[in-house]
Picture 1 (tube, rainbow, N blue to C red):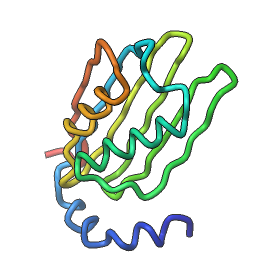
Picture 2 (cartoon, helix red, strand yellow; picture 1 turned 90 degrees about the vertical axis):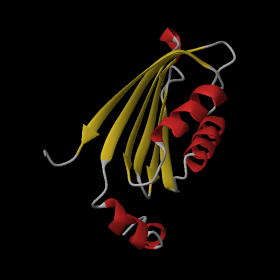
Picture 3 (cartoon, rainbow, N blue to C red; picture 1 turned 135 degrees about the vertical axis):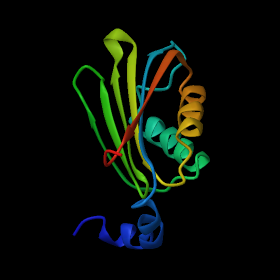
Length: 132
């Protein structure tokens, strides 16, 4: 099964996260002219750096580049996932981080905001998981 080898090395981490809080961080922002969001390799590298800065672990990533230059990038994390969607014609970017366990979601988003040189960032946080 794809990804099983990478995921198995984080089995203890996942057992801990199974009982930890789950949270979705959804960020919408405007890309500035200096935002490095048109090169998928650069975008993936900066996203991975941000995840590691927040104590997360990237297991794999996948992306699609659309004919208009829009990018959808997904990083599969030991702690869940990070997705980034760009709309170059509108200078918009949407970032979703679903987190479990010890990953520092606010730190990941702060690092991405800085590295991607984003403006007008609006973050919504939503608790996820089983109802109390």
